[in-house]
Image 1 (spheres, rainbow, N blue to C red):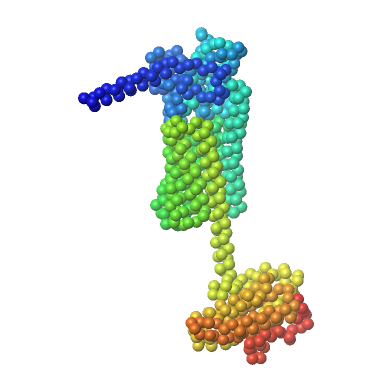
Image 2 (cartoon, rainbow, N blue to C red):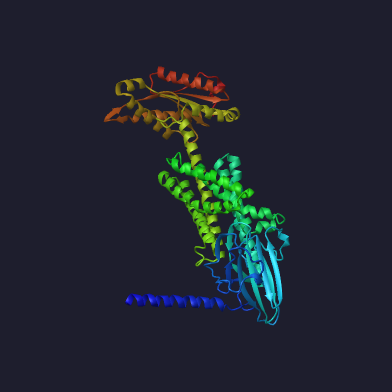
Length: 583
């Protein structure tokens, strides 16, 4: 019995609630344009209904018993629809003078935006037709707008009809503006869109230049992606229709879906090129991304040529949600590679994915409209996309620096002897090639050829591993003793060549002698054994002679040191006067 009473009470409460709502809908007060805040929406002060069969052309055709609903922010997003919506509200002017108000929608690409202003027996009908040029509009604003003049102490019943020729995003949001505030609002709106679009297009332009100069496909794809994002915002907002192609409404009606679909599609190709999922061990992710890219390309072409308007809109909404896959898959690649550019990519696409997913929920399904206004939702989405553009640019820059570092390391490795860390014979050839102008003009350098004494005996008696330690020891000593502008090369098994720049004969001798003494006085310790060793060196000086001639002179000096008992430094003394000139 108690349960039945509870159920009965609940039914009474629900009935009272709906009676209250119905009463609220039937007793909506007129909007006094003199006392209302400029820019205020008509939520809870207007009613709407959906013309399911699209049969009503004028307000007088609408039956009296039509089920009008209270318009609120929560139900202002009608989702994807091509059915007409009617909105009605009443305006009044309590002031002593005739006042004007501007009624504005927040959708720039409505096919038809009609207003019927009824004042007694007088009916004023105005229309913004999406198939006509921008100049045909009464009020020149990117967003369709009407001006309504209301005489003092009079009432004007306003009917708004919103309709599209095909399935499209539908919003029932309307705002009212005074004349002065409308001009300021319009200017601010255009400036914001221009700023966000300019940033995106600038990023696209910068990376396009980089892609051409550096011949990097991923830079090119990213530049296109950001350029399409900028074009989308200009088109979606109606700004490009007003300032770029006002005589071509067909471009206005097609471009925003095509640009958004293209940007989303290119994001998957950018993922493939930038993170290389197949190379990083994610072949299935690679397949998914290629599938999305080709599917998106088909949808972009469909949007451009408008083969199926419904498919174009549904496709772009679906891809707006799928953009979040870039973030999810990006996290997986980053967790495996731990590369900094993958981290920035993941962060950037998290921003973009969140914004596009929220865009889909907010504008197509009305989710979140209870808490966010249209302006805030747009600005948050734009801000997130700017953050995404910045972080992806950082990701590209980090990747490029990483590639340059890898390239530099590879170049160094190709010019370096892996055992000793000294330059190898190839490095010597490149060094000589780069020094040709210097040698021809200044020609001042000294060559030293260094050879470890009895190195074969060290290998034979102690093994090649011990010989390698001896080579490391002498290389360390050489690097410690030469100057910053000198270069040391390993040109044979135990033979080294030192290229000493701009030094006097005596200074060159002291450098090599210091190396000889250090090598003799610091035996190599290997597995508890002490390996004593010495070296011999031959020096030759040059002034505008061919390198081969100077090298032969240094070799001759080395052989002289060997013949004289080893463990010594010998300077070639049999050269002509010109060949031994002081540097």
